[in-house]
Amino acid sequence: MTEQSTQPGVVPYVEWHTGARRILTIDLRHHGTFLSAMAVDRIVPTVGIDGRQYVVYWGRVFFEVPADRGVHVAVSLQDGVQASSLLIERGEAGEGAYLDYVADFSSGRATLVRPVPQA
Image (cartoon, rainbow, N blue to C red; front, side, top):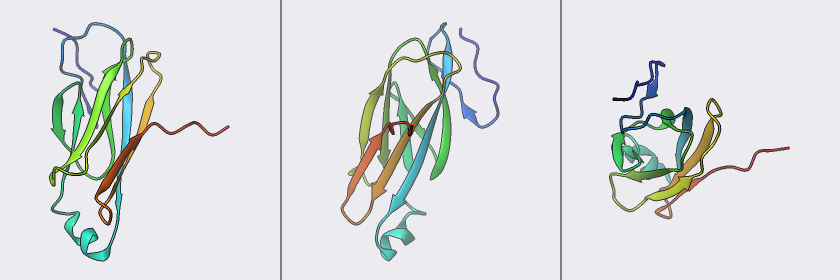
């Protein structure tokens, strides 16, 4: 059994893993038309970490993930259309990882990216 995170507000990594861990921050945003903005209260995002699904909220969410190997991250909406996923590479323990997800209700498209650090 692995020891789970005790950090408040961080979803612990629950799969078997004995190595180093780090915190993944995902910023879940949306934009679109006025009518779609009204629907945002009824459309809930779901984040998948290595296949395990978590129903979350719009805004910034935090997950504990392994630092010593790659992790598959997916974000989808209840509408089943706006989904995106990627594999984040391994990193250093204690080093954070950041992803940005944007759902565009006007076009029905979604993107999940790891932003390039600004110099």
